[in-house]
Amino acid sequence: MWLILGFISALLLGSYEVSKKVSLQNNAVIPVMLSSILISCLILTPVFLLSRLNPTYLGEAFTVPFVDFRTHLKLILKAVIVLSSWLFAYFAIKHLPITLASPIKATQPIWVVIGGVLLFGEKLNGYQIAGVVVTLISFFLLSFTGKKEGFSIKNNKWMWFIILATITGAVSALYDKYLLRQFNHMAVLFYYTYYQAIIISAITLLLWYPIRKRTTPFQFKWSIALISLLLLAADFAYFYALTLPDSMISILATIRRSGVVVPFIYGGLILHDKNMKLKSVDMVGVLLGMLLLFLGSK
Image (tube, rainbow, N blue to C red):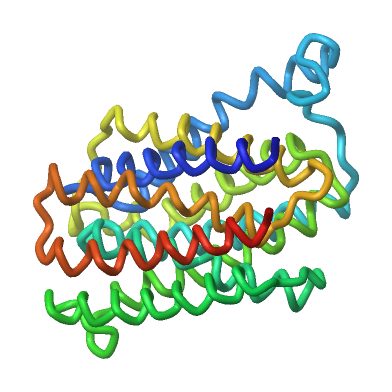
């Protein structure tokens, strides 16, 4: 069951990446983030209110329970980690070809796998070790492909942004495993989303609003609402899968990133990104690495 939920989350997450790219075209990054997070809060608020009125209305899978002060502090930390990853990722996706940024972000499970072994004592077999090696090789090939398009790691900050987004995303995934061993998945999803809204509102007022007339203007697009809907659904499937017995963070994180196929196809067919043959080879490597990790989980 947790594997099926992982694949559902992957498809939703891939569609979410496309929605981000559409929303960020000729648009201000920080207000797009703020709008999508506020919409997420609006979607989750009725769930929270129903949980307070009568938890039996929603059933255990959707009810948001109370949490204590220490738990709130841990969820604030979760919000800070996720927002850091998102800020790096949103700026990178806006300025990089989606067929370059998305595959690099898709190597995130490698760092999660390493963290899962070091922090949670998860054991890797031959298939999984091979998957790590193949994906790392694909990551370096992608960096060379990016250099051909003028996006070198040495002199392009957006390449560093997508790498930092990948690393902080891996930290977030490992922290999810820690949180969901102790706390209800809906509590994590609801409260960290609200804390994100508070933090990104402060960032918008302090950093973007004073210079809004000198930067890219903000325009609301309906694809921003899709960012919220798709991400909430993807996170719910992912968080719920992590609560199920025998689920492995290293495998779920890997399956979740297989959704990279969706933005890759969009970038090739709709945006007509360059060097698609080279990128396709690199993409096959990333997917092969994920397949090996998946086979190793059986």
